[in-house]
Length: 194
Length: 194
DNA sequence: TCGGAACGATAACATATGTTATCAAGTGTC
DNA sequence: GACACTTGATAACATATGTTATCGTTCCGA
Image (tube, rainbow over all chains, first blue to last red; front, side):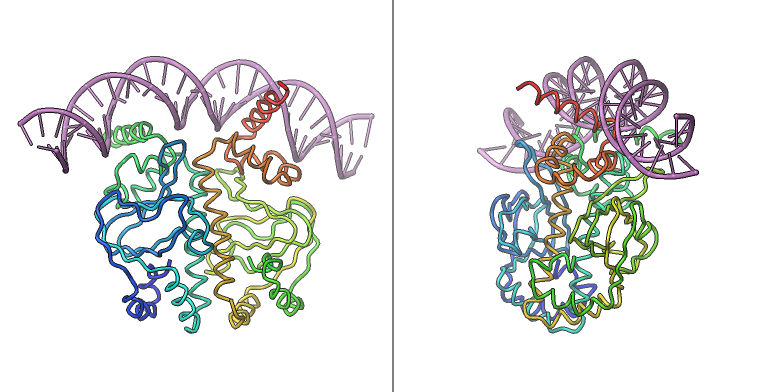
């Protein structure tokens, strides 16, 4: 949730450049694990190209939590900040190009950044956006049926439908892959009535 | 998420005192609405005594999102920071004593606070804690059955079971109140086998 | 190019959960 | 004390969703 905001807060670009020498560029194949559940997060990850998911293990089964695309940044936030074991695994879905920035440099960067005018506002913005995202996901889980959730995905985030294998989407929606197939079949049938 | 952290960050106490004159003390009965869904949040709320819930409306039905107790603070975060309509209603469950601090004073306070050493760390801590809370809720919704979620509540947050009416808990757990009754009956039966 | 993963669809059956309705106990109000 | 209101339990039935199994397709590595 740092360079992710380069476009919204252009002043961040200077920091990107300044800390570029400390960033580690990686070209990695699909199913590469960048952080394993139970380990402590050491790096902030910025995605230049590719597709990454986070998931946790439930009785031997993967449950996908979130997807990240080009020009997005991520870390296992709690683990990164508080140095506790990560509740999630971070893994590539597509071949990807990522930049890693080690924790100590992130901390330096934040200290640097705290002298920027509007820093408080910027941090709050970042924070609020992330938090709003999670609250929305959470609320959608309670309020909407899996079918509605799938349709939301189709309408609002079609890139996920297009690029992510269906069984990952199923666990992300909170249903079995069999049921997601049923949902798709039902929706397709509905549409064909026209 | 400010004075909420008074105990963790004692330096906040000075700010509490400093901004006390700007805080509005209210003694209010149950079912008092402090912020209505669709309105813009103007106040940060600190609970001295009582019990508050946040909920949203789904087809005329209340869905409870979260409970707040003594010495906790809250606001409709996104609405408060970004001045957008609140997705949730904030309402008392028990008779309560709350302090309201208007937005402009919160902003002043934050600016003030940003000169404290360790401010960055403090803000991140607050942020992370809230975010972790929502992620955990979210993950629990996907991973656990309603029965497990109920048992978690009994074991980890019994004060909620004790003080919150059951139909609020049902919607909080994501099930109908009828089903929550079933769950309780089933668990009671299981226990009586000893 | 063969064979095995990975991916997705579908059927049959089992289970979990919602919906509606009814009953009972407690609580406050007039 | 009669009444409405809130809270909670339970039964009967309807629906949504999970589980297991089978099949076809595609894609990739030996």
